[in-house]
Image 1 (tube, rainbow, N blue to C red):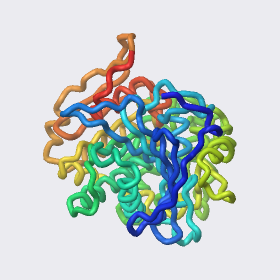
Image 2: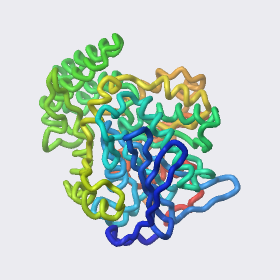
Image 3: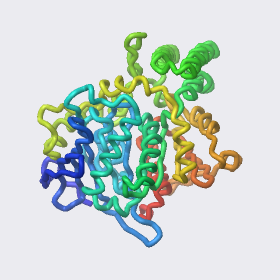
Amino acid sequence: MEFRPLALVFPVLCLSVLGAAHATTAGNSDGTERWGYVEVRPKAHLFWWYYKSPHRVTTPTKPWPTVLWLQGGPGASGVGLGNFLEVGPLDGNLKPRNSTWLHKADLIFVDNHVGVGYSYVEDDSLLVTTDLEAAADMITLLKALLKEVKTLESSPLFLVGESYGGKYAATLGVSVVRAVHAGDLKLTLGGVALGDSWISPEDFASSYGTLLFEVSRLDSNGADHANKDAQVVRQQIAAGQFRKAQITLSKMLNWIVVNSGHVDVYNFLLDAGMDPVAAASASSPSPPEYSRYLESKSIGDTIQGAMNGAIKQKLNIIPKDLVWQAQSYAVYYALINDFMKPRIEEVDKLLSYGVNVTVYNGQLDVICSTIGAETWVQKLKWEGLKNFLSLPRQPQYCGSVEATKGFVRSYKNLHFYWILGAGHFVPVDQPCIALDMIAKITQSPALALS
């Protein structure tokens, strides 16, 4: 596929009504891209962007897959960050990305939830306060997309969530299965992939002291301090005090950053350079600077200018007074009472429904550490867990060099990837093995890259 300069692509516009959801859509004249808005509730608008793969092939046993990317934060823009800084066809400099996941699947990016990125609400009271409410919005969006993106009728859909997006993907996955079974949604859910995902906050908080002590970023006194904070987090979660648990976690992360020589909470081999965790207080806790970190890894702040300049011009349907931001803190704080709730039960439900569930984690992550991911997986009530845990891991390789890039363990419909040399953002840190992994997750019929 040849990607022409963004500002020169002429979109074809249309306005349509899709059931109860009003939709404004546009796209390239050659059909390789479509994008648009769906009014999922009165005055609440979700923005989506679909890319059709130039490598699309179909066999009788392996239909071409579609990946729906769900960004974290919560409140970070998938259309901006996941698309241009991680797996989309163009990078942050608007140049072709060699490792784009379009090699293996069609891609859909959504600025979820309403109020994120190009998505917007006409009244802040319409912001969602739970992942379940956000999932209801997404079901409405998917119903509209089935009419706008005809390939979804025959293409298995894979939900891939990163960070808080993974926590949300577990909830959405359950909602999709139920909607399909009820006949309200006519698509095939191919699987759910949870990348460095915030599935069990207490298990991640409990891992920080041990992990950072073992890699020499904290001494034994520091580890003891972190472990005591984690115990408070666990007690507050057990008591249903989720807002208090979030405040404790923010204070804990601030303390860890300061006392570890400013460790990067997304990659323990790095210093933050600037504190990645904004100052927190009991009355005004702040999340880790997820979106700012991802921007700084690639191209500094230029994505902000592009999203409000060339890309907005290309899309041609973004409200003129809307200013794209990488992170919506209004959305983050609207979800503050849901933030620390675990989603292990939802993963169990997906497994019991027979949905393929993949957990993948970067070796160097702190905020959603591999230790924490392994711990919550061991809490699953899924009947195949004992057999899963007893199996040996299989080494994973990528490219022409016979170097181990990761490991995988699989049993029935549960799969776990350990990705070596990667922090929180696996596709950024290890693009080759990430592309190979998504091909295996989706069982893509695409030929191997030369």
